[in-house]
Image 1 (cartoon, rainbow, N blue to C red):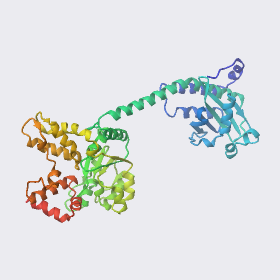
Image 2 (image 1 turned 30 degrees about the vertical axis):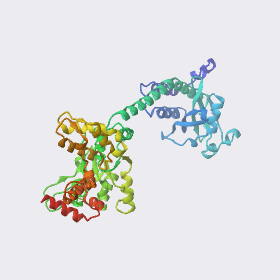
Image 3 (image 1 turned 90 degrees about the horizontal axis):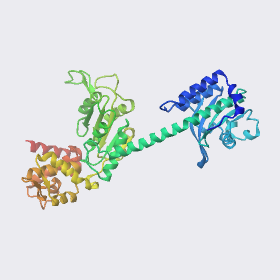
Image 4 (image 1 turned 60 degrees about the vertical axis):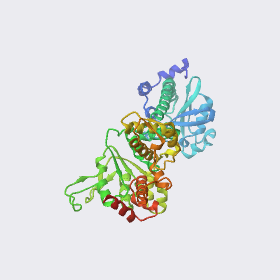
Amino acid sequence: MNEIKPQDLHGILGLGKTQFEILYRLSQLLNRVTYPDSLIEEALDLVVAAIHAERGLFVRWEEAENRFSIIAARNVNREKITDLSEFSSGILQKVIAEKQPCVYHNVQSDPQFSQFESVLLHSIQSVVGVPIVYRGQIWGVILADSRENRQEFTEENLVFLDFFSNLVSLALDKIIRFEELERENQILRNRLQAAQPLPDMIGESAPMRLLAALIQRVARTDATVLILGESGTGKELAAHAIHKLSARAKNPYLAQFCGSIPDTLLESELFGYKKGAFTGAAADKKGLFEVAGGGTFFLDEIGDVSLALQAKLLRVLQNQEIIRLGDTKAMKVNVRIITATNQDLKQLVQKGKFREDLFYRLNVFPITLPPLRDRREDIPLLAQFFIRKYAGRDVALHPEALKKLHQHPWPGNVRQLENALQRALILCDGDKLLPEHLIPEDAEANDPKTFKGSLKELEKQLLLSRLEKFNGNRTRVAQSLGVSVRWVQLKLKEWDS
């Protein structure tokens, strides 16, 4: 800390009433129990006013890197200055070199200062600066300047500014300890959150730990999230986990599947409609965006939405407002939007099937869910969970059965594993699941050598398997099988009859 010498007492006693009052207010600021982000700015505003300066600067001196970092900078109108280059680094260096309070007038005509680019560029005339000393070392500098030849920058002002630097020095211990505790607390919170399991999501593998860390972090924000991943990886579970961990958790969570739904029906579900908007609209109806007010709305398979509806979704994301069908008045909504798809949206953009501006609005924070084949170490945990869920009794998993689960490719991911275990429990009469009980549906459908049913049954099982894989999206099922959508519809109708 700077020391007050006996010869300085005359200067201290010469401080005016206003400056003593400001020093008292500054001491109150620096002795607060907690330090808001605006504390240094408040203090700097008081300093600028006390010495009739035009601007004030508070910088940290990084000696090892020979540079200054701005903590706060203000002008006489209490406006923030963010560019350190607006101030003279040469004068800051001079305060550091002399290690004592300095006041300079007519710096434009002084050869030792006029060489500094910022002095000329910003027409600086008068400067007063004091070093901040912490534990015997210069910690930073407080500087005030003016574009006029400020005769108010007197020795009295210098004493005042020196007093302020002493107050800052006394408070630095507390400020630094507080910052260190805040930093340690944030690190511990991040570690704890990364270690915490996700709601309703099972897995302890490295990919799942990384996923947990991402979800924990983004859940604390209101950012739009795009969840990517293959069918069956748990995209809706991830969306629900984000909601449950967010500040919106007590408000509604709604989900809407967007695949293979007619445009008009999907639009009326999302946006609602006014009475008389179309035949059958006998009364006003709220859309899901309204119902989810204050909460989270999850749109699954966003890649299947038509271009016309995409334009309306863009309006929601840009302006947080909707227009009901049959209405002309826009309505504000407060909802966080999470979307998901197993398609490559960038490719859809290139093909003109998805709006580029909507893609960038949705892609604020993308999260990719790992397929089950990349997290095989989670299979025992998942198997135990599904057995407990569906068995209704104690059922063990034979080691060879577990080995079979590990070796299977699981193209349908966790959903396919769940189905396989549920089917195995139906086939199992005892208290142990054996390898022969495990018949993944794609193994039967894709391997004619082991399939014992008829050709019609093989065709049906293959089609149902693809419908499950693509979440009921008939267009994508037809594409994967090389047939028409009409063929898929006729087959389903035939089996229902």
